[in-house]
Length: 217
Image (cartoon, rainbow, N blue to C red; front, top):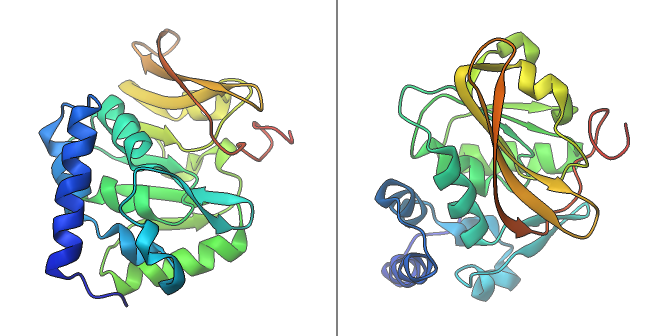
């Protein structure tokens, strides 16, 4: 367990100010990033990288996302305290903990068993409680649907139909969609049982979404 020192909190304040300058407007989102000790998601040897605005490898071909990306996706998602949120791609658990600052109803699914086990232990150490699952996130969690918000933290070749079907009417899905090199951030809102609207935002580069409705489907 990494102590959260005065110095760490100061580094987070500096990071949050940087994110504000880069265009993040939601004070709720910025407060959530201020509250989560990002250094707790890094091995001791790499602690000096924790509060830089960059992604960092965490093993199994995955990364802990750049703080700007976490803030950007979370701001588009706009979860409220009463919302049930599905996160596809638990990874290090950092984004999951940011979501938990905004709603207690977070469900998260991770494809890689090694990462899943490690992140379960980390969230327990941090006294953060989410509903964590290991499996094919591209298929969502139909047994726990519908969700008010779905966040995908990996790049998908298409909009996964299983995830669209698990959205509550009025709910939205935030997902990067594109090829292996670059993806466009999309927000898809379910306006009725059969109708969806789609908004397009900035381009990003994510690790690939694995699974039947992802890259290896």
